[in-house]
Image 1 (cartoon, protein in one colour):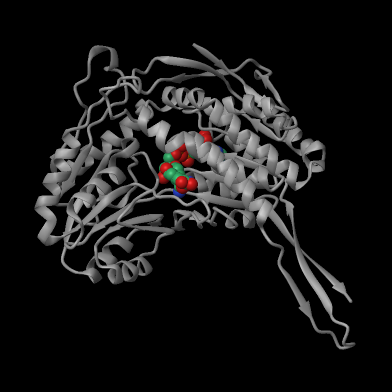
Image 2 (image 1 turned 180 degrees about the vertical axis):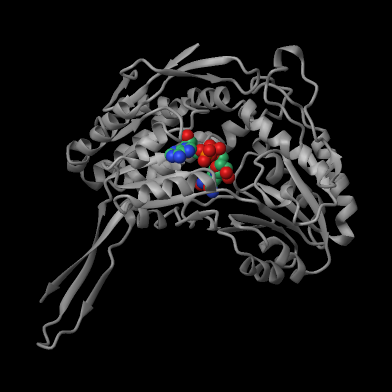
Length: 486
Ligand code: NAD
Ligand code: 6OD
């Protein structure tokens, strides 16, 4: 069993009171790590280290050397690729191919892309006229915002954590990361990378622990934190926003989703089945951008539901290390209870269960894992809770539609607005529908295809702010104007 410590001021440390919690494997529920649990003292030590580091060697490095250092971090992640894959597999139980192809490579990319953005971003300038005819020159400079709290979820831990830490450090900030209590491994491992590369102590800090009344709340309430970037549930975002109000701190939020997948009758049928299957069921449905509401134009409906059903029934459950397996468990027993409660609620609300709806039979050694069957429902009204609320499991409701106008109204009738995936060969319609749907990201004939220079974030209750490329600079820097009278 592993022992995991906090990473504060460049050193791995236990909690002062020796407090720990257990991290269990999603595949068999066995304890795989004893993790130091931070109290106020550890959070305070991490924030103090981060604040001190802001003005030390890190600030003196200058942009070129900082950018080179972040490239070195990316290279070291790539060199230790197998260690990160192993850490994510142990924490999440997801299949090797998902972690090795979709998630861990993004860790290195997140450092490289933002290092390059910061190096290449031009400064804004305006010349102005003045009554004396000599004029004035304005130019903007960007300064680091300060100590950034990075509060992370468990569903793609390394991708989502580095998506925040990469731009924060590229802009010259220092960070205190609070990984999810469910996935402490990769953030800890990144501490080793920081030391190997020579990132100054205190620039990257990690404190482990829980959310409310614990490390997450201590960190977001700490008055030494200048801004908070958070990825997680909308409800948690509300609590963090209240904490940020004290001291008028800035927030960047990536929150929940209840995303629509829309398939028009002219779509490439096989590509659409494949795309919707991935968007609804990849990572056992634990992707914020994933599809939980599918709308299929009526002529295709029955055939589409049958094709999705076959895909769901073909998954092979098993450990990440099992070459014959391609499907993982949910993150925890607690999350499984939540997902299964929605499976029961769907039946109570009158759903037709096309497939799934329960727990798959598993061999004895995996029987205690957080396994659930991929599940498809039809026949529910839009008012049903499983059609309205984010479940974050491998399930979706499929409903027929008859017109473009109707499906736009259906897709928009939700408090979330994170993403949509549209399937059609009619590009004029794709442009029209994409513009009419109130979400941060629309994919046409694809899903989760990411160019890291593009704006990323949620509309409505799916988030605040946009990150990605130069957009990340809006949150991670303080933009100031200098006006010179000529
Ligand atoms: P969560 O909100 O339960 O927890 C996220 C993090 O917040 C954890 O580290 C947790 O310990 C911490 N936390 C919880 N309560 C807190 C509090 N009161 N103060 C400070 N910190 C607190 O989310 P989760 O269950 O870990 O992740 C799943 C959710 O994340 C889903 O809703 C999903 O849609 C969302 N998500 C969104 C995006 C996006 O890009 N929009 C990406 C990934 C996940
Ligand atoms: O690709 C990204 O940058 C990103 N933030 C993905 C979020 C995935 C949610 O589960």
